[in-house]
Length: 168
Image (cartoon, rainbow, N blue to C red):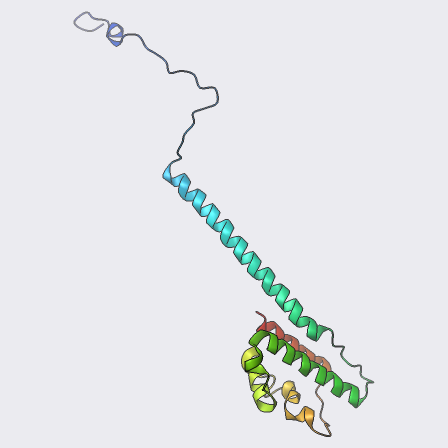
């Protein structure tokens, strides 16, 4: 009761309840925050897919190009001088094939000797070819008599490292 003697409930009138919703309220369109989250998730999915495709493509390219090197068998300790020289020539041919595929005919085909070694070092970001065991791929391999042959497994390791660097 109020000081005037009125009951406040009489002033309110009849209270009408909203209709019951069985499945909850439908809120459409969603608030701006949900749109931002939705667009962010879609963008992440697209970028993730593109990154995954790129990684898979690079791995496939590396496996393809590296197969030229991996098919070359390292000669055993009891192998002849001629077999070791053939191994070195096969490695050089594989490096040339990989370089042709990766850098193009116009840049690689004419290279030989010191220019070839410098290209290998530059493209592989190393110095194994101008100063290390890879020097054999220069002029020495084409001499009539080659006496100082590098360790075959070390040479193949250098070639594999070059291929890995070039294919990244």
